[in-house]
Image 1 (cartoon, rainbow, N blue to C red):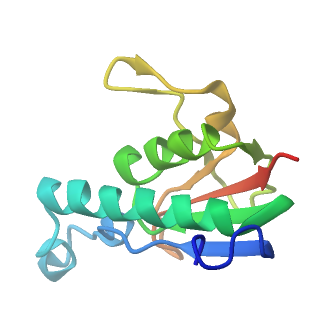
Image 2 (cartoon, one colour):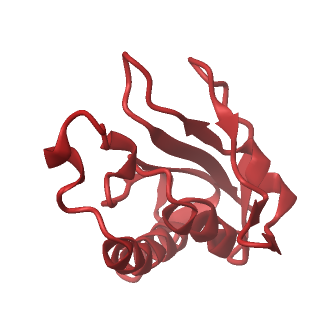
Length: 139
C-alpha cells in the first residue's frame, strides 16, 4: 500500500501477523504447537516490511497503531525501533487494563527510551497477551 498510495492515509491500523506467543497457555499444548524461534524470525521480517509500507502510506501527522498478539521483542519493540528511523514517534497510550511499558533494553542492547510508551499486556484470566503502540508520523 505504501508504494501505491504514499502519504495517502490519516490513520493506519496494523494488526500484524505474529507468532501468537501471547496466546500460549501451558494448560493447552495445542496453543504452542506451532511456536518456534524460527517462526518469530520469519514473522519479524514480515512485520518490518508491513510497518515500512504502513509508514510510507501515512500522511505527515498521521497515526499508525501497531499491534501483535505476541510478547516477543523481535516482533514488537525491535519492529517499532526500526520505524522510528523513518520519521515516526511513539505516543502515549492509555491502558484500559494493567499493562507493562515497552522494553527499552533487550539482550544487553539499549533500545530507544521512547519505546517505554508502548504497552505490553500480559495474559490473565480474561485476556490473552498482546502488544500495542501508537505512532505519529512527523511533519
